[in-house]
Amino acid sequence: MRIVLALLLISFSAFAEEKDKVDKSIEKAIAYLLKIQKNDGSIYDHKHPVTMTSLAIMAFAAAGHQPDDESKEGKSMRKALDFVLLEKHQDSNGYFGKADRSRMYGHGIITLMLSEMVGMGLDKKQDELIRKRLEKSIQLILWSQKQKNKNDKRQYGGWRYEPNSRDSDLSITVWQLMSLRASNDAGLAVPKEAIDDAVEYLKECYSSTRKNKRITNRKSAFGYTPGRSPAFAMAAAGMLAMQVCGQYDADETKGAADWLMSKKISYHEKFFFYGTYYFAQSMYQRGDKYAEHAKKQVELLLLKNQQPDGSWEPKNGEERNAGRSYATAMGVLSLCVTYHYLPIYQK
Image (cartoon, rainbow, N blue to C red):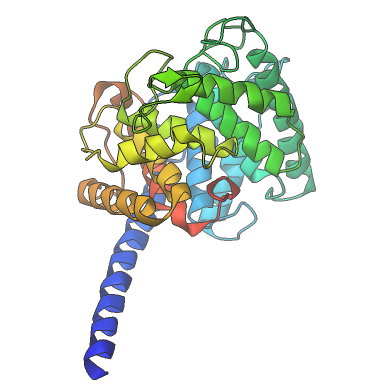
């Protein structure tokens, strides 16, 4: 009995030590985001100020902070929200992607943040403004989806760079779907048809052979567009997109999870932070060995590569242009998946 108890204590101690390392990493990253906040409330270093500020707000919220907190983090979130909510950042059609040139990528990210902040504003006035901006933003997403040719299965149901784009890609589509799911959870009705059409597009992006509409090689994953080969970031993004659409047990979801289980990721991975964010979320939703596998890889890579000032520095060309504010916010969101503070992390 004493041996068993000793082993349990050792195991618990190791777990507590590892958790403490993760908590400290998150605290350092949040401190970095606080440090780079500008006087106007924005939090960014390179470009796309509204989008990057929105990612930072979600990072604060994922770490357990709220805008009505009297802490320095709470005050920072209030200023950041006020910056995002400025009227000049959303056009008359509800589009956020024009003002900071982030296009539909930014629009989806900003909309997701606003969806998560509904009811969390400092006061009634800020809450009402969040909801007002969000309602217009969601309508833009729904309108944009309908601009595709309904007879083109490889485009219909998804989203692309501009609201009026006639084609689609998985990378932009997943942000819109996360926004729709979060908005629906926040009480804004989303038509079932929009989700059903999106699911059909996602299935088109799954790289597999089919017979009578059934997958014949299940252990595969999603590509950037229909017909493209699977890649780490898109495999994880597609899997999460299926999950936020309620397709937790679809063959495509299961197949992507198995494909990702066999993938050893690197800090120099193409779109590392983008892919790791989706990887952490989607595998956590899958649970059991999948969640444990992702947790170990994500924590190992992020803790090992965090800078002394608490930031993360993106290494590949595509993400390097987004800056450290982007990488740091995404790093926090990846590490905080299991904390359950943001509703989007819950089933």
